[in-house]
Length: 200
Image 1 (cartoon, rainbow, N blue to C red):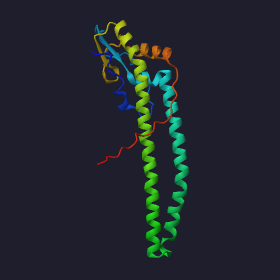
Image 2: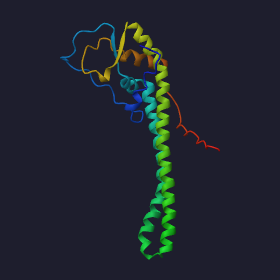
Image 3: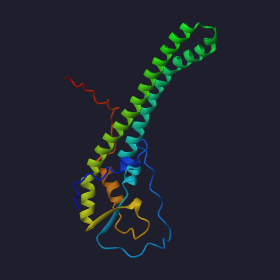
Image 4: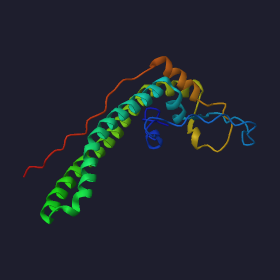
């Protein structure tokens, strides 16, 4: 197994914001627990993100940035909404030309506003991916050390395992190591990549 491969990539798929569902409580008297399998280890990446201090800090920061940006968009959207409602109320009294002109103007404003909303969503996704990558890079050597210390020969995603002996669960070691290494993280929303125009 290549321990240098980015192992947090799959966590991006299950992340909603940066808030990852916390680790499920240990199963009591699991009938599938069985005997420990030498060399087989497990790790919950989702639990690492949810419980490590840096993961929690990242989740709070991204939520704060998203809330601030959405508040600004809400403030921009209220005048537009008021103008749309006003247009709908007086549309019957307008001439066909007036309805067409004002309707087209409102449509253009609505499209521009929707583009801003879409841009914010893309920026949040881009920021989340970059932060996850940063945390993953910090956690990678810690995971490699835990893998070596537990004499692992195979590392499984604990969240995909239906049952088994969790003696060689590296999750706690990785969380503790990550907490010792980094406790917080600060960042701003990433800008979207600049659009390049194809010149003939």
